[in-house]
Amino acid sequence: MMRILIIGASGRVGRLLSQVLMAQGHEVIGTVHAAHAEQNGMQTVSLDLATASVAEMVATIKALGPIDVVYFVSGSRGKQLLKVDLNGAVKVMQSLEIVGTKRYIQLSSAFADRQEKWSEGYLSDLTDYNIAKFFADKWLQENTYLDYTILQPGILVDAETVESVQFNPEHAGKNNIGTVAHVLAALAMHKQTIGQTIVMSSGAMTIEAAINNLR
Image: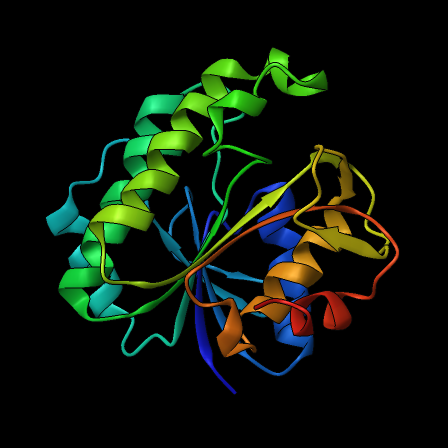
């Protein structure tokens, strides 16, 4: 069993991810905007990514005790891209390096760090979002010592069903939110995902097989 912190536990992906991880027997703590409360068996802690300083984040995380894995799945739904999706993520990374928690899994967007792909299909409508994710991913890849994994799913479909997947496709596709939650949960269980940036779309492989094929 691991102690896992989900940044953005009340969002679409965070809610499902917390359920998957708790069903696996892990202790899950989630950040939300409300005050501390119990939600479906999960401890929650208040954290505003837009306004909290690094020092405040460090104090909040330290107060939780030892954490094995941190997920960043928060998003502003286009309302505060710079303050939440970009700088909020960077502040979390900086905080974890101070606290000493190494394992960090970040939810991004398909080909966020490959600008030459941004004119393809639906990505052409997400330029501002991709800019925020580009710099958040690049900061993680190039400016931290965290044991990171970046997951870049295709456009999210509001379905909790879990489908087969494809990793590192040539073109962006679609992913059910349920599939994304299960992939995120599985990433923490496999050391070969450390240091990987993984693009995903719906495909023909099971999640476990796709992860085992990573090099």
